Length: 317
Image (cartoon, rainbow, N blue to C red; front, side, top):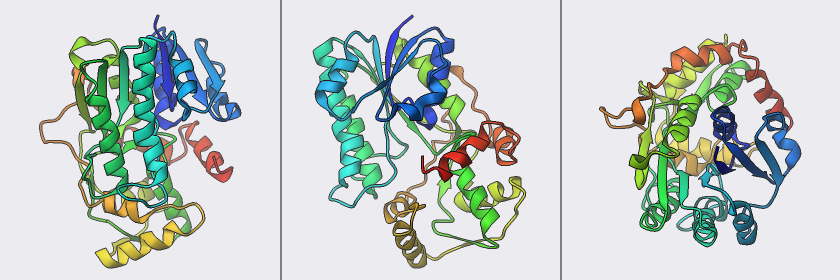
């Protein structure tokens, strides 16, 4: 049994990873700003959910003390604008990894696993990709001091995702879908496979100082994914792609509407295809599961937990 600190363990990928780590016999600490939002983790036998502000250096250091490994899954999709990236991106994607590195060094924790994003780089086209790239660079630069591994997934899908489920809800509400970035390409990877890769790499020596691109078996355009989600949810709709100028205007409008379904920075991120190399496979012999094997179950509402995501959205969580 290992003692593992999982930051972001209450999130979409985190809840799948924490459940898997518990099955493997590990003891997990999951910090959260509001403990009541992690009630689904309470019944897991070796999970300790603690209220904490992970953006404080002394708090991170206290949480890391006595752990065998730290896993960082924290990420945000939107931020106020800034140069080279906005304050929310800077805080979650750059400052937090720096604090984690310092906390690991001060407490003697050598193993650090970090979630980045596919095509992240410090000179990327969007603030999201630039901040993710900067944080990843900080982690990999410490590979001589710590045993680090970085993961770069394409878009991640699964029962509680806010990707395909969002498209399904839009299809239910709209007779026609006008879509910015319709030709952007993605290679969706199943959340359960991402969790399996992270868990498998935990104590594998060959994963130290490595960064892994994580993709599913098939490439889709955004237009194809939206049409697929609409069709599988029982609300097939025509999907029309917008010209770049109109797409940018749509992103600007949605950025200022309640819920912020999209932002101009999201639009810029889609200028780079989120796909892996043609011969790229999941590491450690893990076979990626296809979107068509998993998504129909929760888009049709037959996957029990998929119903919870709607309630969370209604509650603003």
